[in-house]
Amino acid sequence: MPTAASSKRGFLITLKSGIGIHAYLTDSKGMVIFDSDRGRREGQDYSEKRDVSLTLAGRYGARSTRDNLEDSTSSVFYVGAPIGNAKKPIGVLTVYKPQADVLPLVRERRRIIYIACGLIGGGILFLIGAVFLWLFHPIGKITEYARAIERGERPAKPNIGIGREVNTLAHALDSMRDALEGRASLEIVDELDFHAIVAHAIDQARPLAEIADVTLEPAIAAAVIPMCGDAFILQAAVTNLLENAIDFSPRGGTIENEVKTSERNVTLLIRDHGPGVPEYAREKIFERFFSLRHHTSKRKGTGLGRTLVR
Image (cartoon, rainbow, N blue to C red; front, side):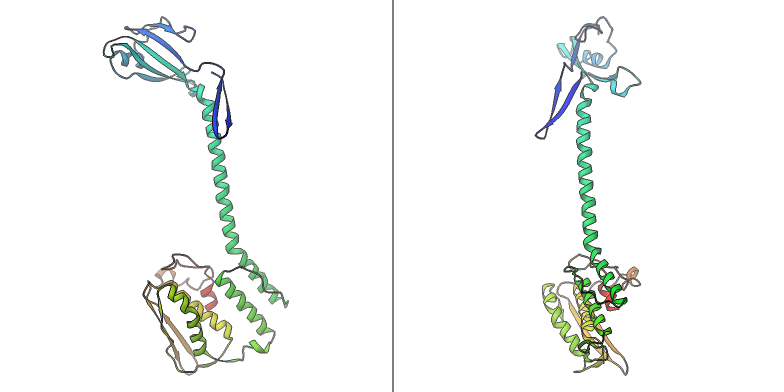
């Protein structure tokens, strides 16, 4: 029967203009003696139909049959019930309903599902775009900042949020710009005490180590290690190595720090007791944006810290 579907307050309401269900009655031999659908089945032998034959045999009788074999929407569902004794009925009452009668409801439900899937998919795409923008927008700002410095301009340091690695990189670029401009306070021919830089970096990283339940040992070195360099960039590099060692250390672990000197070189050894760098990652560990999942926090960094260290 024709139907019209509409939605109100989240419920699907189906309005009918006619009865969508019919019934026919057969005798004990399976002959149709009554049909509510204008009597068009009356007088026909339905003894071979499953709804009739199974019910007359004392079993559950039902079937689904197409009125038009070439039309999949013309299926009609039939369910039979015994009249009289269920084991030896004197007849069968079959109730049947066309599939087409529920198609508007099915189409409406399908439309609602499609809309919901579209909204969910759109939300996921929006979230992916927002995360992508949050991760890479600061990199674009830093890139433009570096290009402006390369062109000889003096731009203001960009606002790039709170990311640790990108802020370290921005500070390094800012320091590099000042060095190139020849500012006396940050000149690269400055003489530094590398041991003091390492000790200060260890002190700065100690609160993070305490949170991770990791012990930071003091640097083993001579009292003073003179060298030439940029104090800010060197301390940023050492701090990044220490924080990386903390991230990959097991709880209760120890990080050993040692500074070795030779005639012309200074070597800083920072050793943690975590799982170590996997074999597949050893050649990529200093590549930009390459990052491993941290041992304790299970998060991943931006992959810029070790690039700065290199």
